Amino acid sequence: MLDLARKYQKSIGDQLGYHNVEFRRGKIQDLKTNPELLDRYLKAHPVGSVADLAKLESYENDIRDEQPLIADESIDVIVSNCVLNLVRPDDKRQLFSEMYRVLKRGGRVAISDIVCDEPVPEHLVNDPNLWSACVSGAFQEEEFLRAFEEARFHGIRIEELRSEPYQTVEGVEFRAITLTAYKGKEGPCIERNHAVIYRGPWRQVVDDDGHTLERGARMAVCDKTFKLYSQAPYAGEFILLPPHKEIAAEAAGLFDCLRDRRRHPRETKGEDFKVTRLSGSVCGPGSDCCP
Ligand SMILES: C[S@@+](CC[C@H](N)C(=O)[O-])C[C@H]1O[C@@H](n2cnc3c(N)ncnc32)[C@H](O)[C@@H]1O
Image (cartoon, rainbow, N blue to C red; front, side, top):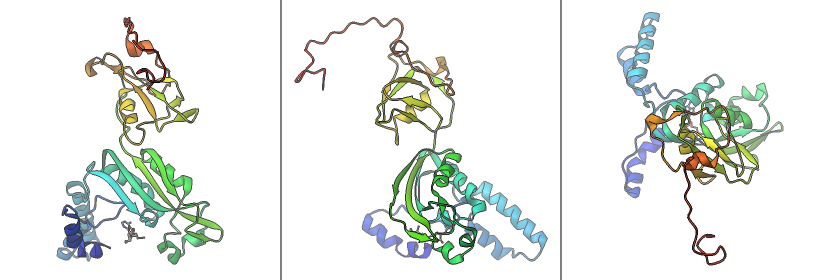
């Protein structure tokens, strides 16, 4: 795959008018280890004893820390097509935490892979042909989404799940799925009198921090959640109500994000808000109050 990509790098770059692409070899479940550096080390220091092996391991630890293949929080978007299911079951947890580590705050993943509707029986898991056909290592549908949740992604969404199976083996159906998910919901919860109203159509929704938002209700949210809801993938789902008077960051207290509560309009407007402003026109077709 890398040879193919590198072979056409120049001609495709010429056609697109961009030469800003770089290909790096690595394992998706270990984006710290740079195999090129390991290859170079092994050429100069072949391993012939346990002592050599210890030196190699020590070198590997050093390069992982000092020259990681992909640095922490350096990536805007991770795109992958049909690779995650090829990672060994024991490495799958690390696979998700590595994707999370390298993404910038606000970054996202767009992953296409294979999921199954039922657990894959053991004898199929151990079948090398089915493994390389992206079948044996498939995630169970819900397990796939849960893995992103457990790695702290938010706004996880199934963009596509084909109704037609890609393959069916002994009654287990395998389908192609495309999913997107975001990084960046961590951080302190600060009270700055922000409110949001969930538009619907569901009666209520629960976000990845466990906040329940009822349709039409003015709910109190922290500064961080307010910003999160104004961006993808939530933008447009909520009516955003900032306070009339901004609370300076240094004057703001902590917000209790474990408790859902409504925001009284007076908290948004201020207790001393006594403005009267009447519209000159009558509400109805052609007026400017009912767009
Ligand atoms: C099914 S192919 C998909 C290739 C490509 N993404 C595409 O859509 O054409 C799977 C590719 O993943 C690579 N691969 C397998 N295990 C991997 C791992 N742990 N980390 C990174 N790549 C891996 C394989 O070498 C192969 O090139």
